[in-house]
Length: 442
Image (cartoon, rainbow, N blue to C red):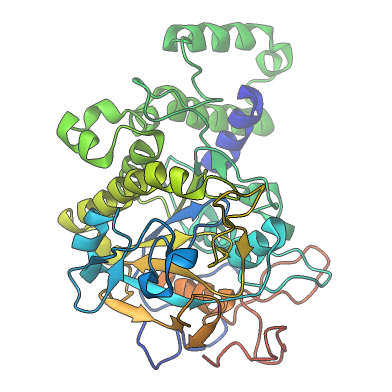
């Protein structure tokens, strides 16, 4: 992303339950579009950890050692967690120690094996097809919890750390105002330069000199400085530069954290991104997405997992613990998961040589905090992890639950530019492709 485009986004942003036998959410009364429910939200912020490419459920939160090596591969000794009867992958000891704080959703399903379509369905809570391109959960949160709803934070209300996914347009029909601000950069570097705001090696003095030069060259603004449009532009510019050079920039300075805590998160880019997300929660940013690459493991799956899983364990495990220790977990949802799972049977034949392909029929997500009840396993798969056998959970069920905990009415409508009826979540009268189930039935 160019610095100019990032600055434009900054300007726009500155100016601009689980119980095992109960529905994930209950319908509420409709409210005016863009207005939060009058009842207080339990979750003030969401940290979405998007496992870009699709993590394997058998090798994370739904281990199947009894299925044999053709399915569990190299991971035949799952860990017992802090919660009796809940087992997870052997390379996730920190998460095992935090198991009472999160719920594992082993009944996730949608049956889609294509990255783009599965990503869209999981991140919007709407089935594929139809004439309406819906916005992501982050964009909807920005609408209901952002500037129009009274958010006054200096940081834009919808942040992506660090790279946009590119699988679909997160803003949907809501338009560019609700597109996330992606920081770019690498938080593991010291100092972390937010790409498009302050480039590496580009000092604050350089930024100020540039700004002064632009002001001298802006003959129109200099000629009519008190014109309302010029004054409004200058005000927006002041806010944007305060984000670049003022207190806003300090948010992204991880040197303000202790070296011991940074080590605990892990000095990887992902680990430091998790720490950055916690800092954004402290500032009240409503929605933060961490796009975590490296999970589309068609080949060399187990070699990659031995590197990725410990990194993920440190980052996510420490994030949950850190939020809890600071009294922030009760008001922050941590949502872990990707677009689908991976084929339970290991592909040992050439050219895969120990890989796993896409599997949307059964997979798992994890949720913690913000009103979700920890220490729970919701749903189940068969002995090989191929099909959901109990308590299937569809994307709209999970997304609707997140909206409810954020205080966003699941029956509210969104402002479509053509006046089409577009609900936050599919309505009671909309038959869904997954067996024709209605949204309120789980």
